[in-house]
Length: 309
Image (cartoon, rainbow, N blue to C red; front, side, top):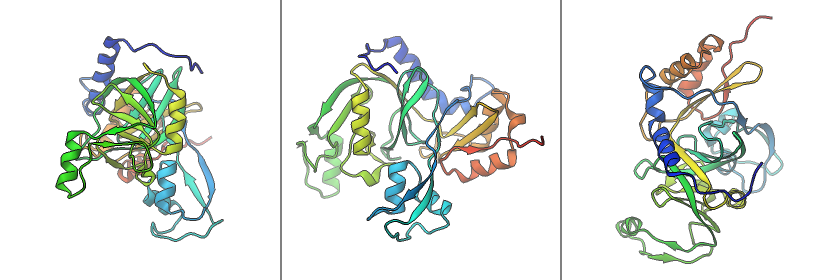
């Protein structure tokens, strides 16, 4: 892995990345006229056993590991509201497909609510994130890192000040560093839309659509990303609720998320387009693929057709 300081990405490259991000969801649903993405080749996360800690809930665990609380509860045959005992164990599956739209830099997939850091075509880090709510969506496009701020001051945008006033809250123009600062201790300023990737004082919001467009990470993850990137680091924000990967050995994985911004065609239609474009339709168990597409649980699922020896 190369963690040396990087140069600013070329403006022409930014234009291409912006076009790619903006068109990705449309490409999948209009396969006849546009080129579709190739299969991803990497799964991040794993299946493991987790020992309950005091204060844990399905919401807190899911936000930390990138799994919906209802999905996590169902996998353990429990209710979302279940109360735990310290030391109790549950099963967690937090496998996700790492979209391969970027060779080096930061990649954010909005419906997936994940941030990936790529080096030489491989994801070396992956973090669950909170993204813009449907009424305040996160924009897509290419970017580069403008600035790295530790213990940032939050200069509250006028739009958020207006929202504070409408909700009857005390209107703040500036919030100093500290526990009340929603930016947390680390802020990676981006060149797109005034956005940033930052820590948060509300970790339970992670893996949801809760922000005004910015990208929130768990404080530990924000610190880790902050240490791995440099000013000028290139990046890309995409909108891809349907992801497909081909893994060595012939396995095909499918990951489907809710189309929270309502930009895409029905998931199973997108799956057919991706499979046909990548010539893997005859390798897929279409009954399983349909179930995964309908469930939209946001995890990488094996849809490989199991053949007789």
